[in-house]
Every structure is written in structure tokens, then in C-alpha cells.
Image (cartoon, rainbow, N blue to C red):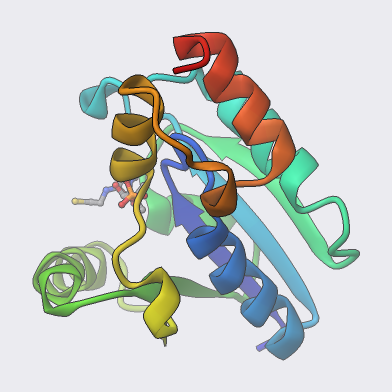
Length: 160
Ligand code: PNS
């Protein structure tokens, strides 16, 4: 199995996501970052903006591609041929949610395997939601995101 699919909403992509993508890119020959439309999550950034920010943030990873998707993850994964889904796991709270997602995805297609990469301690607390909250309230958040994402957040919220 040479291809990994790293799915997410990436609203916006953080250094925590990039750590998972980078580590997957060192294990697998090819990584496809699958950016879900996730309309139900009411994302701050448009689908196109999120794809573009992941593209720019992964430009230094030669075997990483970025693609939007708006259907079921298992269908997207199947359409890409043999592949495994790779997701990050930060804490027990993530496990609960991922456990459910994994079971549902297995019901939809038992051909897709999901592997989890555990976040290192420095990213355990990091999420797109907390970064947006800090940015909205005018705090310093540049250490959590790439410069292009920092600029995009400043454009959305203005500087503190
Ligand atoms: O970054 P997120 O929001 O935690 O990622 C969740 C994501 C996008 C991986 C998940 O919501 C997903 O797979 N969405 C696509 C639709 C789907 O397949 N849902 C699972 C069936 S219940």
C-alpha cells in the first residue's frame, strides 16, 4: 500500500495537521490531502480557500498532493485506487470521535483501512478552532500556522 489519504476540513490547516501530513509523507510513497467541503461545520474559509492554503502550506513536500472532495470519504478513497486513510490522534476525546467515524466508514466500505498517527505533545492541544478563537480575539497565533495561513486569518479578523 503506497498511497495515503489524509482527510480533514482544514479550516484552516495548522502545524498539527502539517505534522501528520509530513509524517505520512515519510512513510508512504504518495500522500493525497483530501479537503472535505464540510458544509455542516460552517467553515470560516471557503472550500477553495482551504484547498489553496493546504497547497501553499505543503509546497515543500514533493510527494503530497491536495484535492477537494464533497462526498463520502470512503468513495473518494476508493476512486483513488489502493490507499489507506491516515488521521491524526491527539487525545482520548479524538479517539471517541474517530472510533465512531472508523466504525461508520467500515460499514460503508470494509476495503478502506484507517491508520492513526499520534500527535507529539506540543500539538496535542492544537486545533483549527482554538487558532481561529485566538485570531478572532487578537492574540498571537503565528507559531501554530504557516505564514500564508497567518495572513489569511489576519485578512479575516484584522490584527488584534
Ligand atoms: O478535520 P475534521 O473536520 O475532523 O475531518 C472530518 C472529516 C472531513 C474527515 C469527516 O467529516 C469526513 O470524512 N467527511 C466526509 C463525509 C463522510 O464520509 N462522512 C463519514 C460518514 S459518517
